[in-house]
Image (tube, rainbow, N blue to C red; front, side):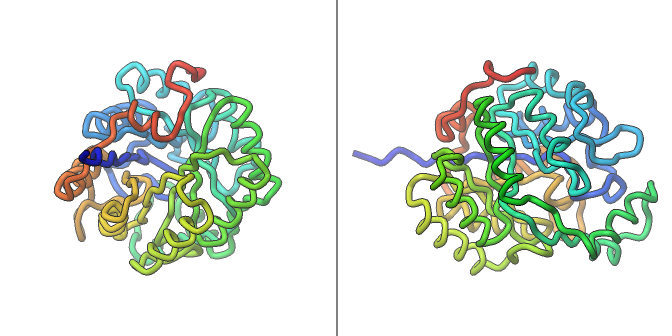
Length: 311
């Protein structure tokens, strides 16, 4: 009997705290822009939408549920995509602030960084010289001396809150130690299988973007978790498409989106999230891989369903 084709989940990270608004005129900032861009990405083939929010006046990252409430219902009404809310927000926020949207809206999925790390964004200062808001330059400069804090207690608190709401997690692992941290919480019964592991490559402070780094992540995850996890690839910046393609060929799901990379080709800004989703979909289909629908993603990740959220 022929083996059924493997389904690949495309996650799209629509906007985020990593990039600042004026680095690209195409980055969605207002609730209306975020909603429209998210729906376009879903129509292009993304089965999961990873969502941050921004203050529509200043572009600053915000975890204010009132801002999320301006776009979450609109997205849900317009498409069937799985909604994945950030618990990262900004390294300058408390855990309670970062958890507010996930606690309020009880999404099917929430992201969770699996450890504290240096988070160096300051090299962007050498590539961009004009900023719409002064906080943007200050934010990048401050990352020379920045630790994004996620202690074991922080992770435990986030896991317990999500578990109580039936929310599962996209475990964002920026280095090998994060996989071991995740294994610790699996052993304690707080992280539930099947795990959805998002391996993150190419950010200063985390693992690099070399193909050997990708393989090291996979070998370690295979050894720690066996068949109890679903693997996905996030390559930052210029690593986005190459690493997603390499990972998909080796069994991974993929994540693209303007949060992770502003580019569609060398020197060419992506015009939309949908453009990136379309490009990775073409690559996946060229590899004879099938794109998972939102409901197929729900089945693979054992999610509670879009009718069980609070928005």
